[in-house]
Length: 257
Image (cartoon, rainbow, N blue to C red; front, side):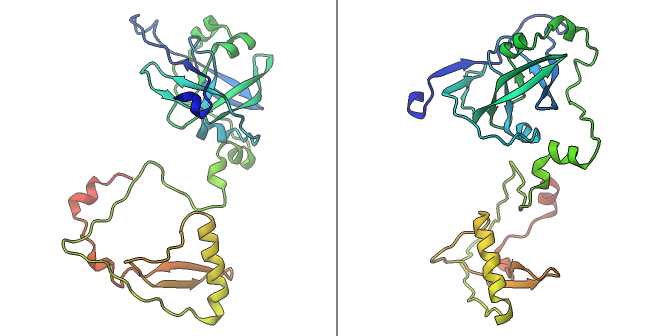
């Protein structure tokens, strides 16, 4: 099955099940320099490869194209997942420098440093054991200027509309509600070119999409902005708002943002 999507091997990772005492079972954490920026990993000598979740990879500011891997990873829970790709990076630790493959995996996984990097960077696990900061879960980055912030958190500075991840909103209609369609309103001639340009921009960004027919429709409202462009809004008061169920106080308290 996995050969059909270019996977030639499935590699076991996260083999960290243990019956030892809590002290002996404590995880190893280490920070290594990747392309001149420090990144914290959990060290797992039971894993061959080193990987990092996509969101943390982006913070490193590495712009090189990801390469196909031909492998899949299997966690200790037997779940198989595919890496997004890999990239060759310069890594350093205590004076040891090497060029290694870094695998990029979907968000939700912790950064993991495997035994290939352990050997090539000559990482001494006994020294990690003696590090009193080994149990600190979050890496503290040294921020010297605005460039450091932009490098660590590039997604914050992207010139695009943001998106709230892992959050779904549902609008519930009243019982017996039927689709409502309100004819479009004429756009003033002075704004038509600007409106068309903004619609094209929203479509290119994947925020809106064209629809030939629809049972639902609300008129567009164009609001001129100080920079000469327009902000596009939709007048949902015309036929939609009255069909929506009211949000109760109890429901609002249960909403988590």
